[in-house]
Length: 141
Image 1 (cartoon, rainbow, N blue to C red):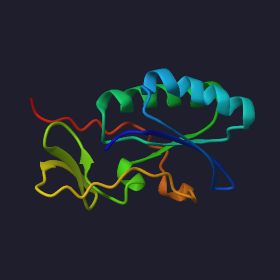
Image 2 (image 1 turned 90 degrees about the vertical axis):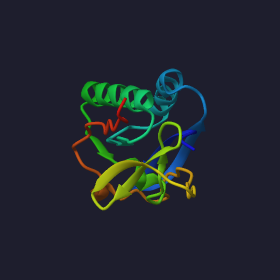
Image 3 (image 1 turned 135 degrees about the vertical axis):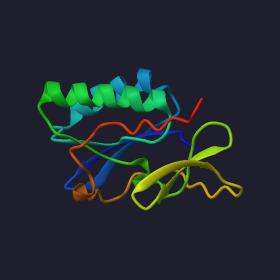
């Protein structure tokens, strides 16, 4: 339920273009941003900082943080529950990330009430924070 990778372009907080792909984040993210950079003047970046796939979060963060530094634009983040109506997020095996108030826990659930990730039609910038440090919530080994 974590695929596809979603990238949106917002103008005046309204979603104007969406990219959705099942390709590897490491391979497709630079291509998507090359296309976006050729068509739009990017003024800020917003992303889901986790929880989710450890590798995808790491790749996304490093790419977006580097991009924000090079372009001198802010990088803002929010947890991934923002994009799936606070539904559990698949982890490993039968484990799921669950948002409980301000806490994110890792637990098993019997009935899956997963909701696909979706970009909001209207981006509420105040819901995002300049604290873009990824949420690396890993299960005990």
